[in-house]
Length: 349
Image 1 (tube, rainbow, N blue to C red):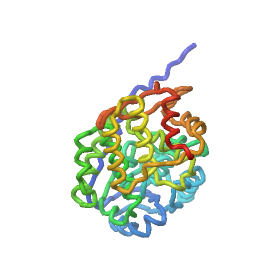
Image 2: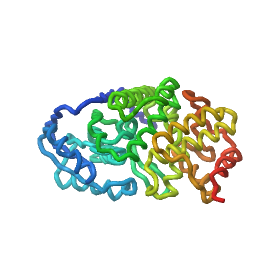
Image 3: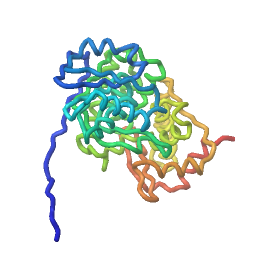
Image 4: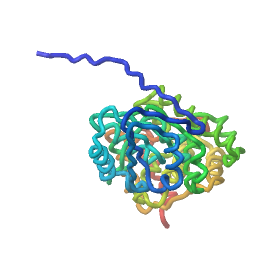
């Protein structure tokens, strides 16, 4: 006997991304703001002045990618259980990409899923990490290998929060902006080559263009079964770098910047991209203080780590490579010899 459960139904998970000064937010439920000491020091009062809720809980977790793990998730969940949060309760992610990823993941598994809102405070999270519903944590095998797609109810990107960003954090966000331009918009890249991103109006324009690009791709491919994977340009190499350095040497955007340069070297080796375009991308990254080189201790080990990438399947490694600025290719047919020839360029003498 076969009994079928019919679950075909359409669920509208649409939400707004507001890029502007934060307005008054009101929620008639229990709300937990998940943040870290750094963000709290600079901006928590600013948020609380604009937040009206039935009952408020502030959950403060350690600051840093190395704390993006099960232990921190359990801290978030336990504090919610202690305050008797229920399925109508709400989480607010108030911080950068690490805060957003962990808060979203906690929301996705608390009592089988509750709502959350993103209020990103770094450039990287405003242009990329807060949009699209990817949530998760790292483990010993790699980055974001445990997680879920769980869309926020809203995203509020207030440029005010960027005024206190250290220069490295700002540069890390620029790396993700460059990624958007290289993968999907050559005109945007051309604009970035002369733009002054420290000018508030031009910065807001760059944020808007990046979010529009991400939103368009996510709307087409929410669960990353196709074109959305292109947004991982630079990440396949970058995630290995982060894993090798235990998330303590480079910010995420810095590792992605190096990863883009490595990916471009592979594109050049395949004859897809010419050296001039690769140099333009590298120069733009360097102009914003981003690292573009890395010393690989063991090329075989570096290559093997690619197999832990979420986009790879069985023995096929998926690479995101730019054919030209504004034209990206998702491929699992790049030979091991080509990639290892690129990795050898970065090997220690």
